[in-house]
Length: 255
Image 1 (tube, rainbow, N blue to C red):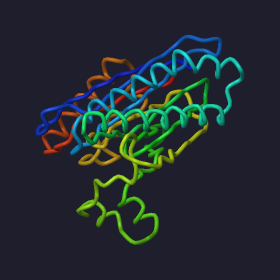
Image 2 (cartoon, rainbow, N blue to C red):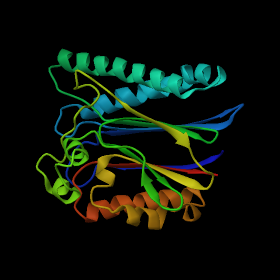
Image 3 (cartoon, one colour):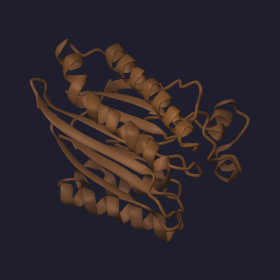
Image 4 (cartoon, rainbow, N blue to C red):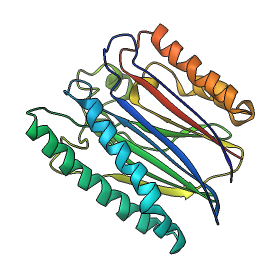
């Protein structure tokens, strides 16, 4: 597979600091082009959230350059990716927590990472940043680790109730501020002429999935310029609809 990519981030209409961090890297290998995307959303009311997200993104970048080649060329297996990423997140959870204690600050971050190798995707998730997959339609690939999502899964809350619940932004865990971290891991095959959309929660609160699909379907994402235009369009649409969070997205088209 080969990839077209676009990234866009915006502080939004209310916050003074952009606490989101994004990583999008590709590399040429004997297995063809490979890609790693990461979005980390530093925790909205926590001090120094931008520090937490930057620390974690840097750790994933180091992993891609130092650890991933060994995993790839030893015959990549899902369990090896999962274990390596879980170890990374647990290590950074400890590092961020210790940093917070040293400067008397609370800080944490979500984390969603996407690795594409040949026709296989690998995803790890902590928190409520998301990955979507667009082909014939749009599918949410990750499940939010939030209070309202858990209540919906248990049948104690409807989607309509979740949208207005006072705890709708409450995370069950995040990197740096949780004593126990249990990442969700996903693996599967994807098709050429498809699009992955990675985003922080601020990018998708006030926009419906069908709106995304109508402008981000694979046949419309023919160039990186068009992808960038779409990312900017939805960012500005979010702001016009009074989204108050930081807004970040990474778009990847596989072909």
